[in-house]
Length: 238
Image (cartoon, rainbow, N blue to C red; front, side, top):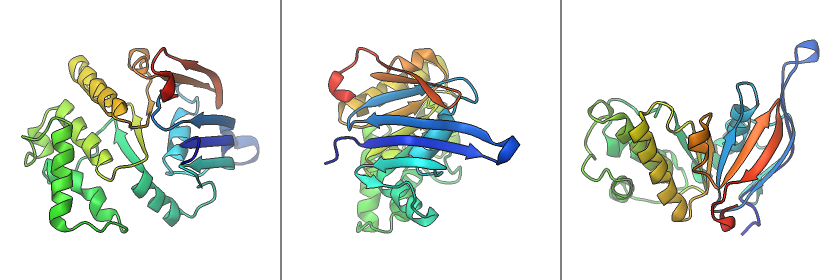
């Protein structure tokens, strides 16, 4: 197993050319061990969304190196990156991104259907999706559609969907951004439970209170890491 699940070295991202070039990231170096819970913060334009997109293999850096779970993904083709995303990365978005006509269990099933390397039968796929929904506290909501669920429940479905392929890393982009205070706290407690079970979580947030749930807080500013702080959580998780 690699020493670090995520290794980023000299990572830069430039949009445009010449006088209109925007340097979203400037030679960023970062390492994350398996089992970490990391929050990435920064003001608008700091580069945090760009960094998340590169870590999630949704985009490629202009220069630098990105090694994910021992594999250098820096120069992979778009198709190859899509394969890495499906095998190794689970995404949780602020807006849930659930398909409204599908039930909770069918939404969670989708990544299994897209996994070309999967060898599960249709029944095994269903059972795994149902098990993951049970694990996030929605065992009694399998056949509810998104409009029949609260915001917090929809985000739990989204988290279950992110976990169903058993990814190496969970990327959460403002996971509580659309939720009320109580629902947001419940989602953060769920992320804590997943972390305690061994999940590696990298979370983008603008909310200082949400960031305090992480064991490590990285602040970006102007495309650079302005600070990288431990937050008093388990040292092993860094």
